[in-house]
Length: 368
Image (cartoon, rainbow, N blue to C red):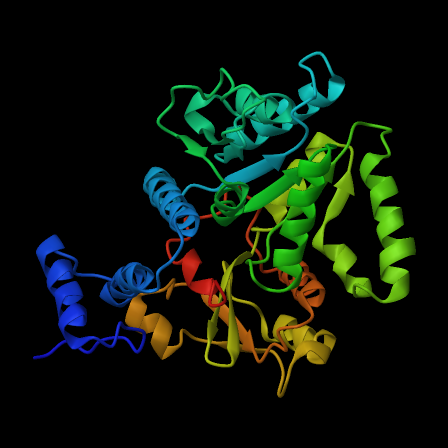
């Protein structure tokens, strides 16, 4: 039987067949459509008379992503927190100890810590988590030192040339995020993270903005966001629920853990947003959600449901309880409020240290 090729192809039958033959020679049995399209892109670059600099960017980015995917793959089912913050924070700064304490608290609950592998807050997070529970994604810069001592030489250290591939891996692999005071880089990472969650380009996730006790870095930032951005209608009023400002390590830890108390994951199946839960909701709880969140439903409302055919076919967390609705795909702050609501259900299980493995978590990223 002739293999059905993706619509994206070179449109040169001989070249397309050679790409299929190459996949056969490599023993590629899964995801052949994606692999074929990657090879197609490389073939088309060869015929586009692409400039050398553009090819070098493409080459380096693809190699970096391939290596990072390989490093993270064995730990994909372990919950992770990414920690952002200033490289200039010194080890004797109280903020360093604050970051270290939070990473240690989460590591004790089974979470791994991911940072940019440099000095300052990045080192504090890895020191607190310990080498076995740490990942580092280092950026190669001409004017800063390499990876910090807590991850240097570790097989879980990834080196990156480009900021965009580094940020992809810092955000793609984690189940929660903590941002501590920092400069341009930290603010860039924080705002990009919020943008991805606000637009639905990333899964909902807990985002903690952590300050020192009595500090006003993030509270001042949040006030500016409210008075200068939200007041002009540039973001929605409910976007403020996408993050939590705190100066307390225990509260930050609870924010991350509680997010997965009952909520497990989500997936779009056609027009339906399927939200997977750890505990079966009562009819009264579902009715409460339906009444409270009709405003983000395109038609109909929130209802309990079983696994869809698509989920059954792919064995995608079929043992979990579910609710579903036609989400408008716009009000992601309200979606976060719905997740908070299901986590408060009386039927929800007690808070455990780490979320269960989510082997199909990438399926939620339909917009990747």
